[in-house]
Length: 351
Image (cartoon, rainbow, N blue to C red; front, side):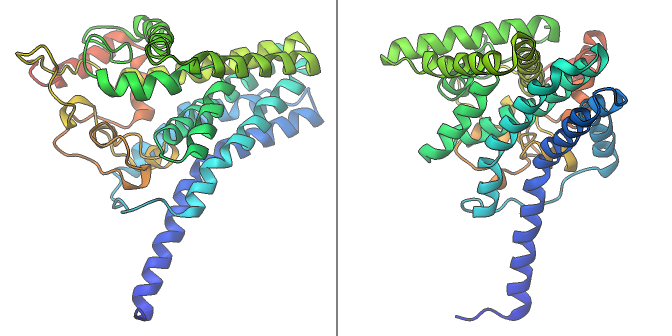
């Protein structure tokens, strides 16, 4: 049956809009690649060239996110458009290009530019490597899950692929979950607890399944490190370590925000109540949704972990953050301010 021209045009416009929206994540590796190119041509270029992506992620983007307000885009049914899928899969070569490019030129930079480029690379990795990797490891396609694992292994966090799906999603909002922040727990205490707990539980999951998946992803990370040191020296390897550590911290700050203080009730039979929208903080700001593949619609993600990011919806009955992730990430670094803002919002806690 032939569709009316106006209806066909509307659907084509929707597809084009979602392609553009999903390609937002590519702004970071493109901007970082420009920085690397400029520093390669002139290692004495202004340090702003090296720092610009880091300040964009933690300054410009959160500010624009506050100004743009709420995201009113409707979720799409079915599988993501094939162009959307290609954008995500292509993040692997894009990320490896800027990570290795940064490592290759890092030896010629002064201290200020070196740290700026390493932090910019890490901020990019937190989104392009870890967040995209997170989206892909939830997919049913083996190709998607493999690319997701490679992205996570590139920053030394292959254990996340194992623990997140088989651990965090089962134990979220309980004291057994290292990635759920407890009420009153500071970000500074949470990050090391979550990282070590994730690694420990990933190994336990592998042991219970008779698998060595965590060690396999870790071996790929070590091979990457050996290659970097062999080609560009120990200084380049240190650059990769710093960028990877920053990317992991970026992830863990978001973990801190997503479930802070929320707890599932233990039932009479000793089990916990099923996960639902009450067990994740929800946010729905426009720009951060685009950059983070709707990760802020986190309540729906945990209630329906198999949903692709394009199908996630904002749940009004979930606990609501007062601002998007961009602003909340900055607030989380200041524990007294964080607690003053967030503790009264925890369901069941009186102001």
